[in-house]
Length: 506
Image (cartoon, rainbow, N blue to C red; front, side, top):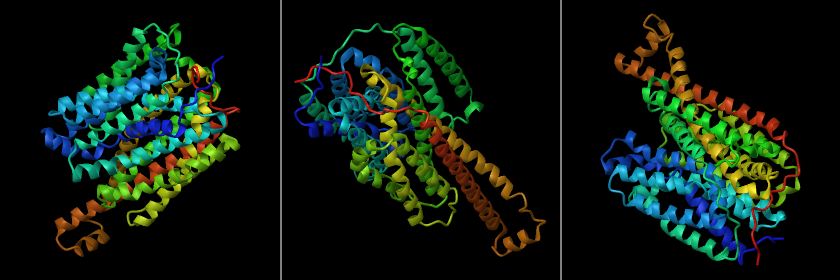
């Protein structure tokens, strides 16, 4: 009988694991604000430079569901160490890239090695902490997951403005080396059980084609005007066919590369549904707020970052309390409270207007942080609670993959809905602005030059169109969060995250 492995220093091990995850999650957003600078330095258009983001997202999306297979083959500790070291190496190669082609290639490799890092960190934290403290470990990981994407654009902008864009990648090198060395040293006494599973080539190839094509469609759809583009149509058809083959094959194969049978577990199924939908709604908020602040309120990217940053305050301050006390309550009630808080903040934003001040925007962000602080830990605990010990890494990888895909769908749908509804509202607003309307003539005459007045009226209608559309989006998001209260109560206790595949203890 194996005993649970305890590293010599739980603090050092937790720091090493958390730092690696922070670095990996940070890299999903840190390059976003630097794209214009990167494009200028490498001599390409800003539109071409978005492949820096897309290549990373595509590769990571493909690698995430393979976590279970890779864990069985190499073991959790070895997979974490090598993934972290390779992440540091590819970060260095991204920084020294002399062309956009080189940068996109190394970002793709970086995304591939980044895939297993988050689920393996989650599995390792659960495996080394005793049951009473696993909530604390998951709360810490949740805090990292929330804070890193917020810090990414702010840090990326500051580094790019004060140093140069390669440093957004170079900073990963010492962090990655330190984290991997700490974990290697602390976990050297743990012996992971490994096997040599048969490689499911059909599943692997259809996964790469299907998920890769789908991620490209979601990332480039808005830029290419969706199904008015032959490229998007063809890529969508390829993705649909490949994913259909993948699903049929994986559900019938004896040793699938991605174990979709994990959905036989009730808590995993409903917990994952809640995670994916809630994260998609959360991602939509995180995407739309800075865009709205810059487009409608005229904020700079830096001030938009400051206005949205308060969302990270309460998750940081409450991590200890959530980890310590949340498991003492029914986790469904804790998650329900989180969804209600998130829903209420969405409804508050549905009443925002163009003249709203910085204080009120930041205050709602701060309140939303309470919902975020209470959200991740209960959901992660619930969805992992009825998995077998040897299914934790695979389940975490699959749930994280679906969560990431949910975020991509959300980003595409949200921006499309916001833009299209804004155009529709603009048309409705200017319907009655005609030269035959006495009020219109009087108003425009008071503005002086007719051409300037017409341009100003059109600008005001555009602003109001985007504002009304913004309010509508948040109204819908609010109801999504409220409806998730019903979903989470379909799960069944007990909610105790089991330890991962353990290994001989010392």
